[in-house]
Image (tube, helix red, strand yellow):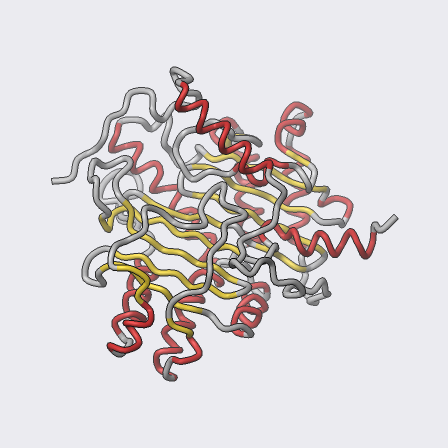
Length: 378
């Protein structure tokens, strides 16, 4: 039977003891985030010209107004701690673990009810109803593990750090970041274009069987439709899709891997039948559809304009990993070994996912580059 791990001092806001190993880990993360940003790419390097700066016609005033309303609630000290310039390195300090070093911005646990509501309004107006509810459910599941461990003061629905970047009041590029255990969302607006990556979402457990949010479940569709896509392939197609028999040790393009190199591998979706392709598009939609109305449709059109490769590892009847990879999208899904629970092999009650925009447009970097070249050349 799987039980809970109990690690004294492992999940405090600041470690009880800064051991050499912990200091080395923090130093590595700082160094990785300080590397000049390139973006996830193949061994052929960055492919340019994939993300043209353009007007979409979408109304982004509601998101901007929500950000202004939130900032207006903050005291001067909170403003100093909770907002950053667009080029601040803290964009790249997000981490999905429960340790709280390298966090930045304002912790929602420390904010009053009005400030929390204002943050949730920014999220609600930026995300689709599905995407918003998924983020909320994962925050709730963070309380579930806190209840199971008796550590609600460390693991709960408000132990997340929120940051605003840029100056939404000025009409220029701006964005926000939500950062904490299993919920890391980066959202950037350049004009009326929106980039919602990197987005890391995970849960352990994926179902709350007790506690305040009993019945909450996460990633049921991501798991089921991913499995359906693989099992619906012919034997020959499955052989093309399989990357390995065993799951990788972790997601390839997770935290502090903004410049990861990953070549295309697996089965091209262009070789699927009409029915198989419908399943693949449904799966893509779960990840792309987290963005708000209009933005998700534009993003889907962008993704469908390129060949996407479907890769698989593991057993569809047990635990598995899959990815969807194209020049403009990287999605990874994986069952994980226990961190809060004591299973040392992957199990289905712990899931990690990541969505990235390869070739230099995570954090909207490529759009921001074009914006500065066009409007701030001098």
